[in-house]
Length: 445
Ligand code: NDP
Image (cartoon, rainbow, N blue to C red; front, side):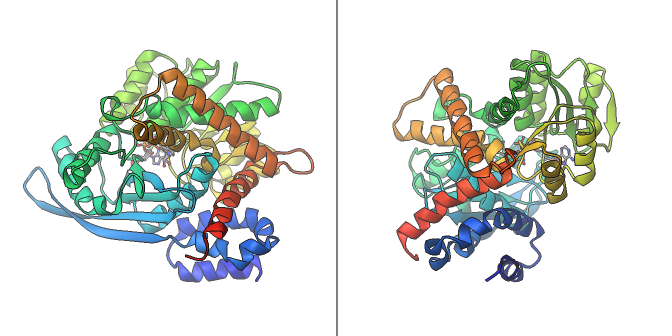
């Protein structure tokens, strides 16, 4: 079978799922030679089996809003692959959540978790709820209804979700509380928990910190560092916050943040405790528009635009999928950008990725560069399982070591003959090999 025939089969089986097909194609194109030249993988049909989720649940979420009206949303959990550990991946509340998005995220998560070096399978879930403007009471009732169904599919050795877009520590708390009541047990069934009831230090910052640690490794391969670099960041959430904090700490100047309304250009840098605290306050209030940042800190705001037109040495897309296209990539390249690390999942379109590779810009995909989040969730699971908690320094040191290992795996599997490190290829091959071998070891089941 050729790669094209293989992809045609996958497309036929998953109609109307463009994000899922985009993610699968991106992986298949880079691992095909590795796959097809391994008779054991081919005999066990591991690639097709890896693409097909092991289980998908979809369910109704009825709930009552503050006006007493009954609403209904749709919830999902995609349990993609459990070859190397329990399903693990976040829950997203966003009006655009659908099966295609969650299947792309669960598929990517499987390879990401494999890269993390920790024993975690892949999954993702969510609901088509728009959390913007919802009261705390509404979010609690909604989340309780969501968990009334989902809890039966979870368990510390079965499936361990976490937060994602629209689901922060508050919603994680409501999920955990509901699970605890229904299962009548206090177990580490979800990560991103509050620090007083099983959470891990550094988890809130981990994704953004990890993205910057990874970026630091990329820069080292070019003989340079973050010191004095201009950084363009998109997003205004948990990942952007962690990335801005760590990049600043390591000597870079972060000049942009963005929301769905546009971007801000802060030439003095997003670099004070006041600015970081404001980001946390907005995130906790589910507020992702940045125009108010511009007013509060008296900086320019560019309505309806993306930050990629700004001159920057480094780009960290930390908002949402497909937020950086081919034109954006061309603008960044023209302005001298040398490294791109994806804090978000699949924020660069395939055209953008190709443009960066062609221009020899070092581009790290989310499954490698934002792996610090799920890795620290894995560390939270380890602490829960042994009923202990580690210090901030201990968790941070483990996070740094994990990001370095992932970077090395990308270098090992992705270095081209001319010395260019193709992180897309490297991360896909490294992630795939581990899962594929485990699937072969466990038989056709
Ligand atoms: P946020 O809660 O901050 O959400 C990201 C927001 O980006 C969305 O709410 C969306 O707003 C907004 N957005 C949409 N389009 C744009 C745009 N063009 N420019 C800027 N912002 C836009 O999420 P997080 O910080 O938690 O996550 C960000 C990304 O990182 C996601 O891709 C997530 O999957 C990924 N990630 C997060 C991890 C974590 O630990 N939190 C771990 C690993 C990956 P709207 O709703 O109005 O469309």
